[in-house]
Image (cartoon, rainbow, N blue to C red; front, side):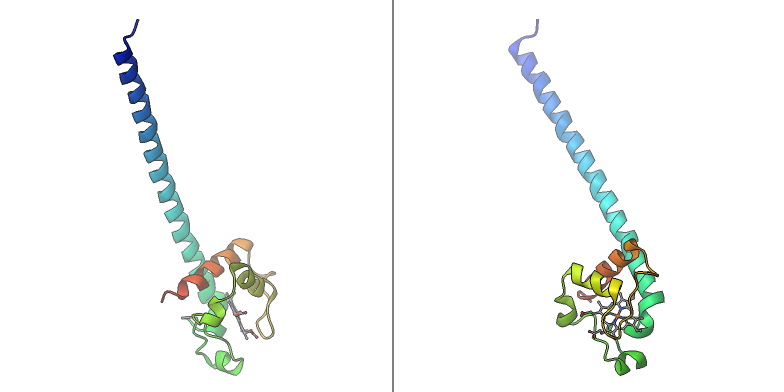
Length: 124
Ligand code: HEC
């Protein structure tokens, strides 16, 4: 037979184990999330450089000859950043005026990564 004190010790031991497991699981998942975000950034950046930069410029400012003649907006601007993620992915998927659609040439993952890439331009 266990005394109440022993039971209490056993219980708090279990609680401690659970807490530790939570901490481990949580740390594990934040690492995974950070890694996923990093590779998503790479995908967004590399896709942007190969597919979008010819018009939007390497830095997204639209400061290219094509950009000027097509009046391409600066992707850092409040005007562009004011779009929801949904609207940005719509524009990339289906195009808008002189902006060509990319649904045939890019995967959903690439389009999603591009939206994230355009978003983080705001901070630069
Ligand atoms: C042929 C040149 C060209 C290419 C290539 C191009 N764009 Fe554009 N983009 C434009 C033009 C022109 C506009 C302005 C459209 C308008 O508002 O009339 C635009 C607008 C945008 C906007 C702003 C949309 C808005 O409503 O504010 C985003 C975001 C964008 N492009 C992202 C991209 C991404 C990401 C790529 C690469 C997959 C890309 N563009 C490739 C020409 C281009």
